[in-house]
Every structure is written in C-alpha cells, then in structure tokens.
Image (cartoon, rainbow, N blue to C red):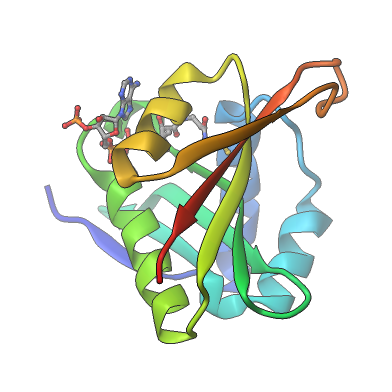
Length: 148
Ligand SMILES: CC(C)(COP(=O)(O)OP(=O)(O)OC[C@H]1O[C@@H](n2cnc3c(N)ncnc32)[C@H](O)[C@@H]1OP(=O)(O)O)[C@@H](O)C(=O)NCCC(=O)NCCS
C-alpha cells in the first residue's frame, strides 16, 4: 500500500476533525484543531493513501518548549495494525528530537487498552492515573516517553 506521511495544512482540518469524531471518544471542536495547527504547524501530520486522509497526529509543546504533548492521534479503522500509527508517531518524535525536546507526554482513557498497548509498544511508560479526567468521569492514564 502506498502511504504518504506529510505535514498537515488547513485544508486537512475538516477531515481530521471528522476522523477524530468517528474514532476518538472525546469530541474536540473544529476550532480546537485549527488553533493547534495555527500554533504548532510543525507538530501535526496526516497519513494519506490514494489521496484520502486515513490517519493523523496532532501535538503541542508545553510553556518552556521542553515537553511535547500528544493532543490526539488516530488511524481509520480499516487501516489499523499496519504500522501507520507508528509511522505518524515516529515522524513527530523525529521533529521533537530535532527541537531538543526531552520528553513526550499524553493522557489516554484507562479503558482504551488498545491505545495504551500501542503507546507502550513505542516505549511510553504509564506514570500515573488521573481520576475524573474526562467529562464522563473516566480516569486517564498519563504516559511519558523520554527522548533524550
Ligand atoms: C492507537 C492507534 C492510533 C494505533 O494505530 P495503528 O496504525 O493501528 O498502530 P500500529 O499498526 O503502528 O501498531 C504498532 C504496535 O502497537 C501495538 N498495537 C497497536 N494496536 C493494538 C491493539 N489494538 N491491540 C494491541 N496492541 C496494539 C502492537 O504492538 C503493534 O504492533 P504489531 O502490529 O506488530 O502487533 C489506533 O488503534 C487508533 O486510531 N485507535 C483509535 C483512536 C485512539 O484511541 N487514539 C489514541 C488516543 S487519542
């Protein structure tokens, strides 16, 4: 399968928002994605096959630019377990390394065991549980990866 990973642009945002709403339990507004892309255009990537966006990763930096934060990522259910999520995440990690960012963090629903396994496969460690993190009262697992 031909796969292209490229930086995201404003024309992609609607599709990313749609895909996110289809596959991620937490619903983010279109404006949220727009604001992140505006502020961190170098930290947002899409995966494309046959001109269709089938995956995305959107990340930010903390205030001192030392920590990367994965805001959201996802791969269309038809294309999972084919290495696309790893490809997207590794692209982001290489950009963060070039920026001398030392750690990457994220929160994931404790029920989202597939994503937790995926992040562990990349090398992320669970560091703590954050109670009542999501609007339905669900806890988050906070995960961290040291890249330096
Ligand atoms: C998490 C997600 C992005 C992974 O994408 P993907 O393209 O399927 O991941 P990869 O193919 O790169 O997987 C790499 C490795 O991660 C692990 N992994 C991935 N999905 C897994 C699953 N469902 N169960 C167990 N392990 C899994 C495996 O070790 C896998 O290697 P393998 O295929 O050799 O076994 C995808 O499942 C997804 O979009 N989930 C819904 C959205 C979501 O939960 N996003 C994260 C929170 S924002």
